[in-house]
Image 1 (spheres, helix red, strand yellow):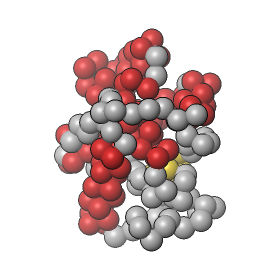
Image 2 (cartoon, rainbow, N blue to C red):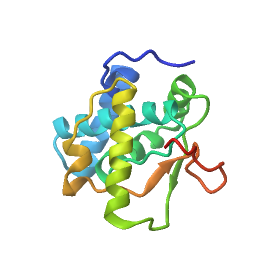
Image 3 (cartoon, rainbow, N blue to C red):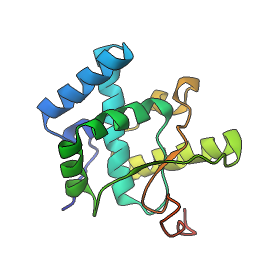
Length: 155
């Protein structure tokens, strides 16, 4: 089952109670403000929705990756979310290889944020393109892992 998207925020993809729990956990563990943790979690959910809608490998920024890591801790809710928005589980698979330095990271952030926008979500550019938001060198599993087929040439 896929979720209809029409210029949504990521926050709308999960129940309000779950979103609040996730944002509170980020605020507690990172000591950032609750308002900032809401932005992080919103973008993590929008990122995951974009991952479900593209065959191209995508990657979170370091700051958005905090939201993904937090959501994964809630295994039942995360698995249910993946089942609702994707054809399968969206695995978090770090890319331990360096692939072209800052130019590659910039290209990956542009590809990822374009995919988020194409999926109908707003992009909080500060969380993707500031020095504090450098790429975490992770890619979603669909065509991004060593055991997946290579990404299509259109990526």
